[in-house]
Length: 218
Length: 179
Image 1: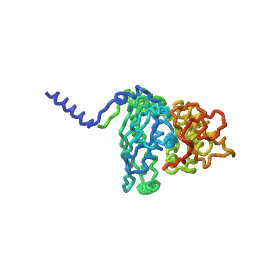
Image 2: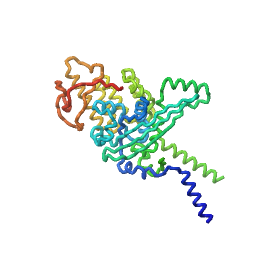
Image 3: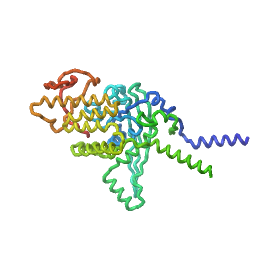
Image 4: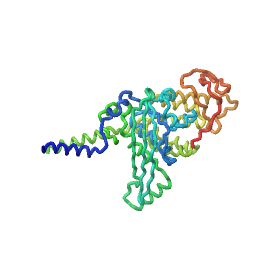
């Protein structure tokens, strides 16, 4: 009787601890990534659902670096976007429903990355502030049109600059606000957001990260 | 005591493994910063600055014995192309292809666009550069980068060898303006 109660309590505790998150391995969650083993990613201009006009440029110019470290060939983002404009492909929204195979033919890309920026909020405090970024990403195979990987990420980046001196921090925030240079923060947000993606062939851990556990928030 | 040493060495191993997976294989320098400046305002000044940053990335990679990150050579070539040096662009596209074979199809496309510009420059009576250095070839409408048709683009008289330009739409080079 006692044991049963204990077990029940433990189960209850476990459920409580996990909240509404599930944990599974990368291989279980994204089998397509391990089956198809894509080598290259074509990053499309993001779809911006926020009122922040700059969000798009911040995202596009800071995405290549984090993704390259994941071990994929990343097509040069500004070049791709310019070429696409010349081809009359301005609207990622329209491409979203089109078959992805065209990117195989034109660019030789193994998969395309669609991104929807859903949140881009700057909040200022007296000292410092924070930038909250959220986006939905979807990596789609140009071979099978299947979604190989998708993720919803919401990241809050602290803008206080970590200086212990209040006056310096205040000045720094004021300067930051004037310069509106959030490039490093946007880059950080991208680094964090793409962390759960299985790694590609240019990363030494290619095909060895399938057993890594990831937590998915429901 | 032995236990402690065991634990300590285990901790060390775990820590090292953690670091090992985060290998520094590229150095991007301030790529995002100069790229952002260019995205906000695509003009000669920001292009020159971004080009200098790309050069620095290549230099640092050589110095630290790292790989040049994906796309850097190609982007450098494309900037050269935009500043009216399509001949120089070809070499950098080739470098990108050598380093990253995954880029082959795209480099073919970019090389073809550059080649068409070279032919067009050659066809001009005076040894003309692309005015304003902003001329970009019209859209490539065929999806086959290896399509081998020697149809002169938009009716200009090309007499250069190995001109592979697909028969495409009328020639209306547009300004590349990013809003």
